[in-house]
Image 1 (cartoon, protein in one colour):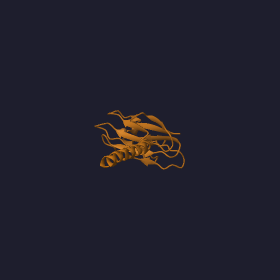
Image 2 (tube, protein in one colour; image 1 turned 90 degrees about the vertical axis):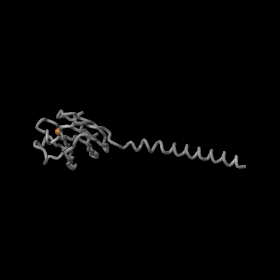
Image 3 (tube, helix red, strand yellow; image 1 turned 135 degrees about the vertical axis):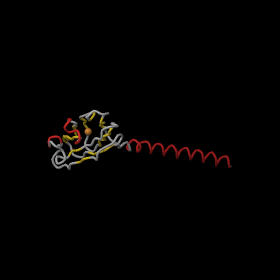
Image 4 (cartoon, helix red, strand yellow; image 1 turned 60 degrees about the vertical axis):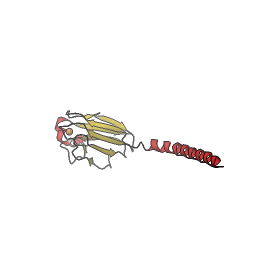
Length: 136
Ligand SMILES: [Cu+2]
């Protein structure tokens, strides 16, 4: 009798585990909601890499500074750049900008409006540290 209860309990536990796993699997892949792409501020070069990325509407771009000596930022705000052509946004979208990012620091922005976004790193705009996000 006890043996039967034990067997049934173990079987139930296995079924519960299987169902939990089966249902958890799709949600964990849906949880891969992190950035669609990472743009690096490479070493000490004044460049975004890749300089142009293409994503779909609703996706997020992450920027990460890899430089131990240079702080960089991500600015898509015509009022904050020297040359307004370095900060372009589709009509009806709000400007955005990060703080100055130290080594290892990241900044994320989610793009909800399709179009072409041109942004700059303001300390290195003069070095042509500019990038483009194309949102389909
Ligand atoms: Cu920079």
